[in-house]
Length: 126
Image (cartoon, rainbow, N blue to C red; front, top):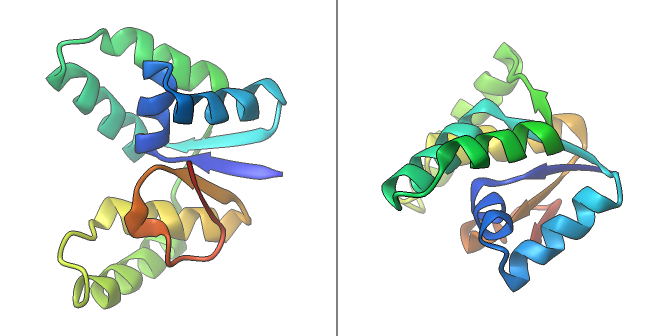
């Protein structure tokens, strides 16, 4: 099965939390795990703001996941989704739209801790 691990799930994995253990299991099972560059940026930003080692976080993500490049078509779909959802949920970011649209495009399950994804199909909340 294919997975995209969201920023919130990577943060839990890096913390070694109970929720992060679920990510660890996916990685150990050699599932097909993908990451978007925007997720890397979000995680590195969070780690830096907490004065932790962003290089270790970066290397862990790069080692454990394949980079997925967002296509122009996915960008278009994400823009439409963002415009639609943003009318209802002001906190829904363009990054979130890119992540959910990418997961849908490749038939991947999105693994996240963020509850604002719960209304989408193909999402596992840890």
